View 1: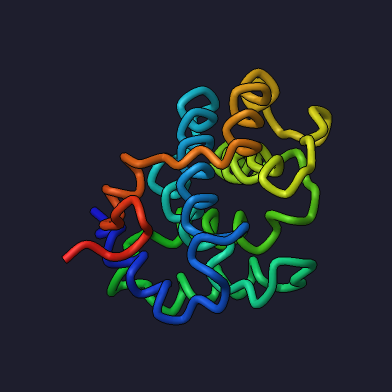
View 2: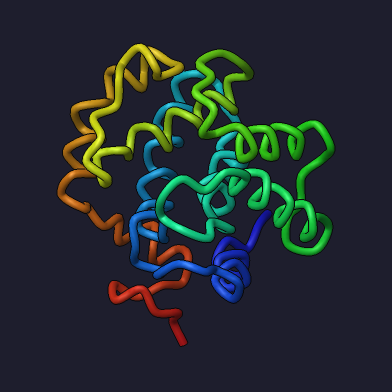
Amino acid sequence: MHDYARILQEILVGYALPVNGYHGVVHWARVLENGLRVAASNGGDAEVVQLFALFHDARRVNDERDDGHGQRGGDLARTWRGSLVHLDDARFALLYDACERHTDGHTTGDPTVMACWDADRLDLGRVDIVPTPELLCTETARELLPWAHARATTNHVPQAVLASWGLTPQLTPLG
């Protein structure tokens, strides 16, 4: 079992961007909700999806084009294997692949990886991009597109996810 609140706290220690910015924790929370819906439909691994939501943008250095940020997020997860990240080799490989290649535009692969990629793409509305249905990996994501896009464009804040990660509505750590 993972302590997601602790993982988030550690990520934020080295997070270079505003915690409430375009690629910050509210985005990560929507990615989690999107990803869990896709994974429930396509058989993806919900635990890997949860970790992807936290790590995929965890080491961005800017909000524009940021080549290599997914790999840096995967590398961060790798540094915490055995202490904060507890996945066997096969499941960790899925997490790393999902992080590393999440901006590459692929649409086929392992169901868990595709759930991760769709989860992130479904939240593109936050930066005024309407996701292209043909660039989503799963039929479930295409069906979720209107729902997810409305949430992204209105900056919906998933309060229950943030609370489970130990954040108050103002995005400050609890305690």
